[in-house]
Amino acid sequence: MKKYRLMCALLLSSTLFMGCGNSETEASSQYLNYTTKTYLQFPFREETIIAAGGRSVEENGHATEIVERFAIDIVAAKDGVTPQEAAKDDINTYSYSGDKSKNESYYVFGKEVVATGKGTIVLTENTVADNVPGVENRQDVEGNHVVIDHGNGEFSLFSHLKHGSVRVQVGDKVKYRDVLGLCGNSGNSSQAHLHYQLQTNKDILKGEGLPAQFNRYIANGEFVQRGEPVSGQIIVPE
Image (cartoon, rainbow, N blue to C red):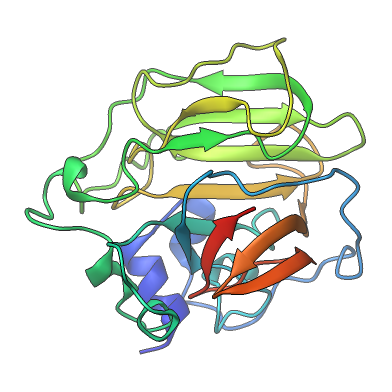
């Protein structure tokens, strides 16, 4: 089974992503050679794993949809997981311990999600209940979420946050690594994870996705000055 098909089944992140696996063609984009304007840093302060990321459908089912063309899904794993284990199709077997029907069993659940760059909060939602793992809420597709306007035609979307955890309001000014909320399992999500994407406007299901090039992080033990994380990488922010 291809990795992106597995990620679709386990990390379904929006109605747009519901169709992944039906197409094996990347969405066309005028931004393939785009250089990110905002100085972006990773949305967690702790070690996490890219469950879906990259520009091809083999790596990332999001690539089939224009608004999610460069989106990533992020989970966490138990201590000691190796890059070889993280790169396997069954990475989700490492993402929880104990009862997989409880959100608290997932290592990423409740971790602080931080701003990737400076800007102004333009959208928030904080009232959507977290799902029982394995059951998606397709009515509130992004669940609890935050959108940052970086002021240069780039907007960051953080989806599936924990119910009641969002700490910012529309109009707030933030800088990178300010806490936005906690990672959760709300919206069209089947297990705790963060869905992050950079896009051309604040409207969640409109506009186009933009490449998100993060600065100064460790990927599988190697320092990256600037790059786009891909599926299976263990990421440690600097």
